[in-house]
Image (cartoon, rainbow over the protein chains, first blue to last red):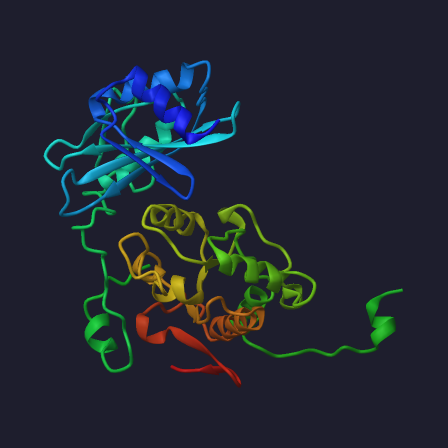
Length: 172
Length: 180
């Protein structure tokens, strides 16, 4: 199965849905609106000729200064045809909500939690949208590009007295 | 056949109670089985047959903090892991000592960011810092020997624990030197 077949089949099933079709180094990438994500993904999974039964990864991206700011990238894999497909969905900063794929692919559960934890992208209808990597009481989403890295001044011989005076050393 | 017949008259030794107690503590200082990152591999190397920490009475790692005297923080400590380390330290029975092994445990190392504690001395008191990324087993053993030397100076009333008295061990090309 080649990329052209996938594009033709998808376009026939969902006319005016694919907002971008791109092919780089033989890998196919489709961009779809988030409203049609669930329908398209279910169709890709259940279609007899495609059978993209494996969701390889769910990734969140922060394109600060671009519209839409957030993007969720899905990589699908078809064991039947040994073929990969990349699906991209955008989400604006004011409303960073994308439908959850947990109902279709159980593996999306933790990966969506990670995207929520680190980037603040919310997945509607997710069964338990909680932090997964950062501590539960953490404030903010550290992988957003407008969040400071959390740099602390490095102590050298010439400035260690000033830094150690404020450093919270533990007591017994 | 007793020891007396073998060794003859052993005589007697005069010493202080402090010395005997500290001598016992240094020669049976059991570390906690606890590794965080790549430094833990070097720690295991120090305990394996090539470097053989059992020469110093440390051949046994205790999997329970109740039975351990020494906490070797071997590797970077994430902020999520920090409460766990503090709890392990609190569960260890006195007297207890802490070695910050490697740059990450000592000061955050290259991970100067939001996720890593910038030095475990922010959450637990540290006795000896061992520099290196990761420190070689020789450096860790040297740090342990310096900790032993520190323990031998302890008074019977308890161990002093202020930042000024902490020992810093730095690794140089020529060997190991003590900085402060």
